[in-house]
Length: 273
Image 1 (cartoon, rainbow, N blue to C red):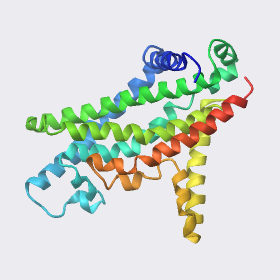
Image 2 (tube, rainbow, N blue to C red; image 1 turned 120 degrees about the vertical axis):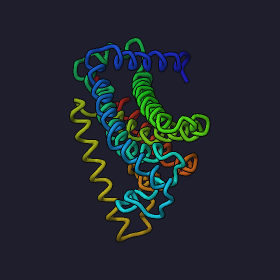
Image 3 (cartoon, one colour; image 1 turned 90 degrees about the vertical axis):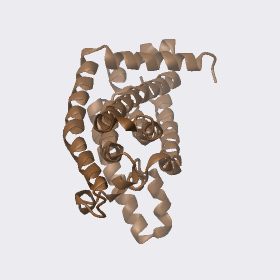
């Protein structure tokens, strides 16, 4: 490892953070996320959590959420966290694909990347941008989780002390969930010419790869292990788990991220600047 590697990584990550919070484009994206999440929090999430809390207080064995296939929400002791878990597993991978699309591609097309690597290296830029985008997403996930925590306390203030372990489990696991999606966008950004192309390719690869591998696995069950290559492959299973049980599947996003980052680094090292 070259001397100062991690210092450069930290500096580049902090620059990405500054670009997200101190530029007009970054602030517009954050405001958009805040508005959308506020709507989700105050309407569908709060409604579902209150409905679930009423069902628990009435000790019903079967309710509306079970009818629409969300029975696994009952696995969470705090209704707001159960609903948040289901919603976040759908929303944050999509947010990751859009937010992490432009890691190196626009700088390469403008010709500024070749000047950046004069003071750094391709590896530092590649991994530093990836770490910076992950840091931004970690902050968004934490903010969304704490807003849900505040909603739960508004309903029942006695949950303050008992909710912390599940709150931490939510944050850690959602960061792991978006890890391979961010790595996929880092790899695509090292290859394509624009963030729009990276987003389109990510959607195509995600859907085509999932369909192809599922088809092979259906006719040749021995190839089912290839599903591990699909980012988000474990999301369906995660919806059935709660709390720290979700770490049972942590090896999947970690393995996917390692493979994607290794491939992205290989592309970055050979890409013309």
